[in-house]
Length: 141
Image (cartoon, rainbow, N blue to C red; front, top):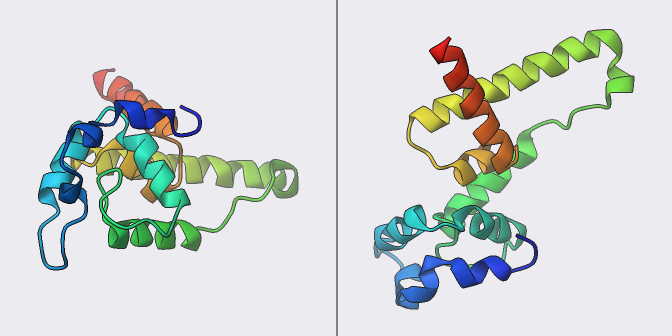
């Protein structure tokens, strides 16, 4: 969804806002439970990752959790263009894709949600879903 239209479908809109802004030392598990069932948690997390000044639980993550996600994402080296890599670089690109796929499936098997996996691995939510589908097909074959 573009913009913030996703907010109308957010389950937090039907929940006491104080749940999502616990006092220091209080648990945020109730908020994360709401987020886990929310149909727009991925959009919410994407929004929160783009706005580092937000506090509270957004997309199932705390401000500290989002900071860790941003730090991990910034540590990944950007891929060079295919033309710059040449033929040998294409093999490197395939290897990185396979590594991402393995990491996505590993996190999925550990029970993490697609939006969290996408943010940690640095891929789109659609890519996470594709990697998981492809892994399931390979297992079934």
